[in-house]
Length: 288
Ligand SMILES: NC(=O)c1ccc[n+]([C@@H]2O[C@H](COP(=O)([O-])OP(=O)(O)OC[C@H]3O[C@@H](n4cnc5c(N)ncnc54)[C@H](OP(=O)(O)O)[C@@H]3O)[C@@H](O)[C@H]2O)c1
Image 1: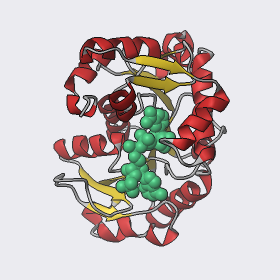
Image 2: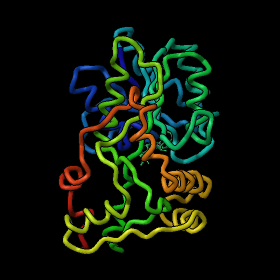
Image 3: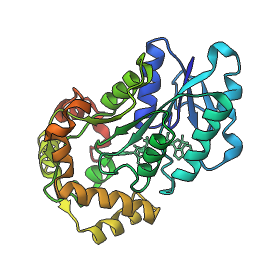
């Protein structure tokens, strides 16, 4: 039984793959390059969501029955917002041709079922009635370059608060769902242990780095322009992510963290922001 981890070179995928391997589960990383990052000693396969000719690769790699793929962690491609067509095509292929029954989808709390980007994939997993699990992922983007070079973080979240969650905690939640004897078969909201605004996160970084770090608050349009000209060249993707920021400014993430309604399907991570930050390689934030 092998778990295929798409986005296997990314923030949550790689951590999940290492966790599975450490617990003696067979795991296969999927990435466009077909190799694991750096010195990571894990098996990897070439896989591109946008190239259907690569869809069979993971299954031919694990053709012996003892290694057949039974579970898949789904991380949407970051190069397009129209993720349903390729993800639906691969999910259908994996189910119909290879009898894969368990899927765990990494999504975002701010993307409702049926909504844009992964929201449509979430709805599709529900529709086919399979053991799909929708994860809410909400953790800090890597803003290291801006912090290092301009001493600031930038967002359209205003004073909205976020339960920042570490990728390690998301990987643990995905591990639990993928390896559970019975499928979780529902949405799981993965949150960190405390609510912080970007102002508060900047203030904590100020203390940690011993120099002032500020939070620049932008409007929707300003943030789309900023994101599209810096870290998100795909303007449509920049719009989707900025719309999530606006929802945060309206209190959406705080509601998920605090509401009784979500208490039963909430996975609260253990890692606090200060502990996470202190463990990072400080050179990414330090001036050259
Ligand atoms: N970062 C956040 O705060 C955050 C919050 C909520 C939701 N998410 C969601 O989490 C997912 C990951 O985003 P991230 O920014 O954190 O990136 P990431 O996981 O650090 O990296 C993206 C991963 O996706 C893979 N990938 C991208 N395009 C691909 C393609 N066409 N075919 C196959 N693999 C592809 C990359 O692999 P290769 O480059 O090696 O091919 C890499 O492993 C996205 O769906 C994002 O919307 C992220």
